[in-house]
Amino acid sequence: MRTLRDTWLVFGRYLGLFLRNPAWVAVGIIQPLLYLILFAPLLKSLAAMPGFPPGGAYNVFVPGLLVQLGLFGAASVGFSLISELRAGVVERMRVTPISRFALLMGRALRDIFTLLIQTLIIIGLSLPFGLSLHPLGLLVILALVALIGMLFASISYTLALWLKSEDAFAPLTFTATLPLLLLSGVLLPLTLAPAWLRGIADANPLNYAVLAGRAVFNDNLGDVNVIKGVAIMAVLAVLAVATATRSFSRAVS
Amino acid sequence: MSHAIAHADDGVIVARGLRRVFKTRQGEVEAVAGVDLTIPRGGIFGFLGPNGAGKTTTLRMLSTLLPPTGGQATVAGADLLHQPALVRERIGYVGQAGGTDRQVSGRSELVFQGRVYGMSKQEARLRAQELLETVDLVEAADRQTGTYSGGQRRRLDIALGLVHRPQLLFLDEPTTGLDPQSRAHLWDEVRRLRETGVSVFLTTHYLDEADVLCDDLAIIDHGRIVATGTPEQLKRQVAGDVITLGVGAGVSQARALLSGQTFVREIGDDEEVEEGQIRLYVDRGEEAMPAILRMLDGAQVGLQTISMTRPSLDDVFLRQTGRSLRDQAA
Image 1 (cartoon, chains in turn cyan, yellow):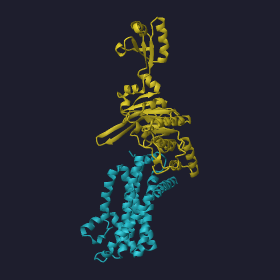
Image 2: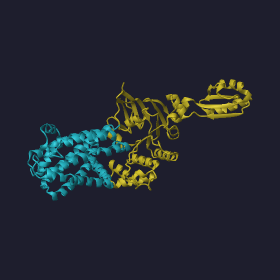
Image 3: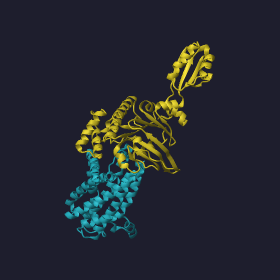
Image 4: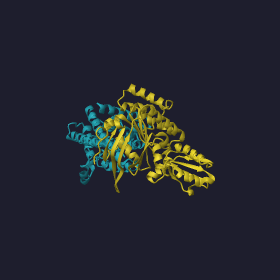
């Protein structure tokens, strides 16, 4: 009970902070728009190429875009935690009886909340361009994005608590997310890749999330890739949450 | 060696053998090397020491932020190692950085803090208003804390530490960086806490602050407590009081008279003073002065001037740590 209540409190605090800052709300909406407007048109012509997966440009592109949004959106949340560490906010919370799990989960749920809003914007705007999605598929996609958000937000917070400085956090985050992104077939499908690259990509868990997303958008909800992708993300998310919760309860300095 | 933990009623903080070792690239560093403290309830306790002496580390251990490497403690009647949640319910803590978000208003921070301690929305709002009035922040209450002056932010920090009516409030260098007026204002705030029965544990490296504000002091250096007592006791331990007499031609006669007296701890060398003067080190200057006057008068030694100076806490610090704190106050 206490944990639930605390999580709700922390979630409310950070949602309030987010909504109070119109610049962040604007960025949150403009970002996915830019992807759609500046990148999606390129795919129209690519979709005709041999090796391009079936389902039409948008049905191939949007799942990858959503995974990318989840990865980048969540991986950068640690920045705000570092400035809070410096301002003593985290210490102030840690000396109260508030649940340590709630300190993480309240923040992560706020991050997921914005990711889901962005997801709905992207899907909604893509529908006129030929994207098709079953309502049940939409739920699966939202769950998948939420799990990716939970996974990478937790990792991001853990790193922030560990490194405590933007100077260390920024390069590490950018260096780590780039190969994850490139090897997930987000931008272009890995069916176009040479065998050795595909081999490496098989070790990238994000790859399975993208495959799951594409299967859902292909109306293959029963595809084994769907359950596989969701399960892999869920297991990793649970591990990341456990690690991050421990970081919040451990000493900060 | 095991220490029996003292009964909780002995003090608001009873610590035995508290230690903390940090692992660094250069090896292990013992930041706190076995601290014993018994701090009475209801007073203002000052923890003095130069930077890096172990002040903040000790404070962080006692406030559950840092697990001790060794030792044990009872804080506000709860066992630090086995009941940290209970300790957290009973203490308030104000860190050096404060802990408010620049974009949140003072009132929102107070309400949030109240909710964290389990109050209903209504209770938290009432308590926030009450505290805003106490620390004189009603006018600034609904502005973002980023617009507050240093003194205003500090008062909000303290209010945040008091939301749940703790028995004990920790203040880590509460007046560092404040202008003299804000410092004085904050001292009044801390004294008011004592009047309401809250025990205060503060760290400082300002000697004047320790002197005028604190009921009891401990000096920590290199992770060890080197002296404890009231400011008066500490100052007496070091030097007692210094009395300087101007007796003109009567120097040798006065010397002879005074050297046999029990209240005189030591008579200074002639080099310490100008010609015709005598310097005396005594335990209690206010009692020694009338005795000196009577004695010299009875022996018909002409006394021209008499003055008394008390040792400062800086003298105490110098004696205990071999360093002057004033030199390093940054």
